[in-house]
Image (tube, rainbow, N blue to C red):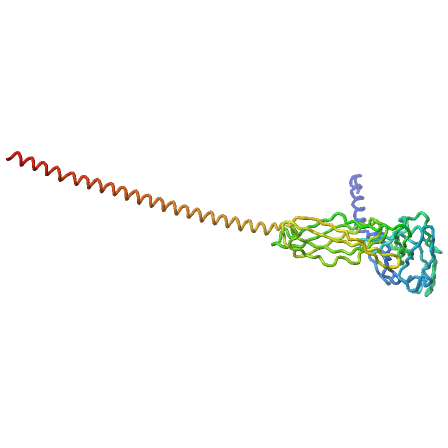
Length: 395
């Protein structure tokens, strides 16, 4: 059967759409190395979609080398002057039954959506640790049950800005999957670097907001205080946070309790904070307050507390449903009062009219009685006079 060009075009578009809907999610869309604090095992693996975190696919481990920096370290931590370098090593072990060929590279770190350290992929440009760190070999081959020590050098440029940098050194196994999709499995270890010089730790609280979710409740709801922590300095910062919710003029304060005590923010990064406090009464307005104490963590792990930073936000807390019920009840009460007063007024008016009629009737009756009495008094006197006159004439 011969089809017109228009029908052939429609059929082709439908076939393409069906193929697109039937195609699986690209594996590369979810590949990101997760290496925060990773020492060995599959805990730090990011794999293809549908295979994420499958330890059965990983047959190698990574760990720090034992040297003058220490033994059994869980991460690499350095304090280096600008223009200086540091040498260390990574130990990679193949626990599988087949040889492995792994790529070795370094990358800059950043805080992922879940608050954990993540690393840039090889296709993304690193400007710090990833650009300054060079492994002794970009690829290594391990026989079954073999362990290889991979040296690396971290060279800090003389022009490097003082402050904290975070990244990692990664081993990656690349393989091909179905439909030509590339799948990478990665294991790595965190690198924390402090470049010496003038440090300027600074933390700002931005965009504070408070919202209340009890608008259609019977008077109480969950209050949510949100804000953004912005590390505007050049050191990694922790944040000790305390928050509270009050009504107008500080009425009925409610403490929010402990707020994410483990938060850490890299220089230049932001962290969104959301604090919920249940069972807050609708007091027409709410005031959310937060006090954040920045904590500087140095290369040795010791901490220094900075002066706290505070913020406030005000939001509406109107219990509309309760208010509508109250207004409806008030309207009913006002209507009942008005109706009662109207009935009382009508009753009084009828009573006044009855009294007025009774008074009028009494007055009318009194006037009628007076006229009758007057007429009675005038009548007998005339008769007597006439009789007397008659008697006089007879005599």
